[in-house]
Image (tube, rainbow, N blue to C red):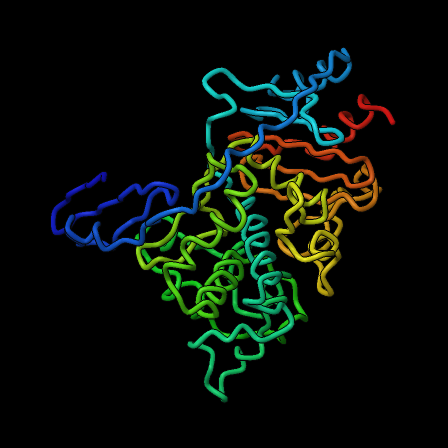
Length: 374
């Protein structure tokens, strides 16, 4: 635990195995730590298979990967900490900044949203939820409440229609203030017909995960489900999914993971949801998350540069970005990327802590593909 006392109160954060840190509400006492959700046990599983590694000595690929760390080639002042490139199921390039390695988890920021979509995909396969059904959230269950018409798919598409005054919507109360998902992420009013308006919102992702919890109706099963159903089968042993103190996953941002663990997620999607012969995601889920949602963000900025499209918690790239059609990506603040290029059977993972200028992930990925050839 870490505690900070101040005139009139105190704040406490507590770390738990697999679940990382949770912030207690202001004024909570240390004995409240024992009431936080914990992973109680895991089923015995065989040790995960290590990633295949066939590092390429191609000088062009080596040069391009090194350039990602020079703070200039792919964005002035960018700060790359890790790059992993996979081709045909094997690591062909890998590099880390000093102080980081294959075992170093970093905050995913919004790449967590794509991990949330993966957990929900597993729950769809297991029959817990259907993306076409209304969420079933109890707080929206009144017949007079129009939010009851919001489907899980609307949430995955970032088209809930809920009010969101700023892009991404400010979620500081949950991320940094010890607030609960149920108090801050599912209480906004409806301002647009569900499905009719795209608006990037952390709350939509948190509401989707809360809906999964209510459908399961078993809090311990819910807290352990992402691990035994997705992370552990994939061998993602250095990934931490944080919760609020009430036991709701904050999977719009608060996940810590390594570059290699993200690559494992990418491999799952390249294999259409199958891992070592076990189906984790529904057949076609990879196509589902990479299909443009009915409501899209504006695709062109004022300067003419191209904004990616949006699927289901993944961003969509293509020829207008200099990349093959069908390319999609998990993206997060400060330069977190997992780019999936199905047509080339290639994954590109880039981690960083950019502050200000953005990393040109499309340009970097295009250069990597060029170096890899056919």
